[in-house]
Image 1 (cartoon, rainbow, N blue to C red):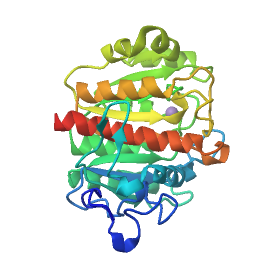
Image 2 (image 1 turned 90 degrees about the vertical axis):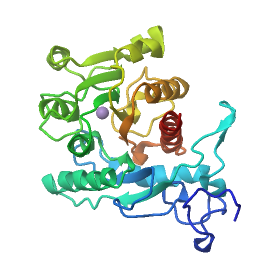
Image 3 (image 1 turned 135 degrees about the vertical axis):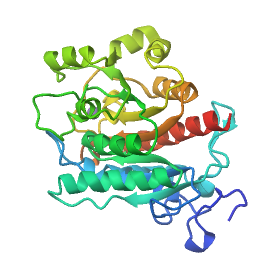
Length: 322
Ligand SMILES: [Mn+2]
């Protein structure tokens, strides 16, 4: 086992650290699996295999497993040697990351599932770690935000998505409604949406979201005016929560999702945006939702999701470490 294994990483005795990506048990990055309240971790990965909020094509319940499996691509040397050639430096050096497993979702669980999600996130926050949640459909963001706003500051929500998720047409607690919940319940201090496009965000909902102070940067605006314009919408020196719906990306690079929409963002500009966001305010928690392996091809969506999560954690870690 190489000396450089991630601090607290999986022991060589388990055949995880130092093994090839295709060997071993696919926790996130093949890191140790610990309870959500395990102390001493900087980031805890939490799977939310829930997709009963899907309004159309289900299957995002298999997202956490697909992302974990894809993440093993980056697990050489226990994930401790993440040298980013483009940055010219290692990322996540010294960061203690573990996998807190999945929330025990049950079919038809409704409120029980939402409470179980909030409970697990509360436990992670109480342990001092930053929760990094793998969806699941986007309805999971509301119970996650409930836990975040209970446990720490009420964050400003930065929401990367095709859709506004501010729907008044769908029943409550679906993946089209988490942003409405977050605002109506006072779980967030404000919302900035980036990447919005397509034909499935209703006009009335659009108007109402604007009336409630939601700042919207469409995909077109983002392309033409750049990430600087998007960042201007995010208040300075406020705690942030980052919710990334994988469908914010163009379907050509992220086909594995329930409601793809042409004209989406590319990977490099999203990573750049995330780095700048992390410098702008402390990021209290993250979710990445709507990866649906049933519609994926060549695992490209899952691999994109896994890589992006490493970038996000790397940006948060770098901002935090100064
Ligand atoms: Mn969404």
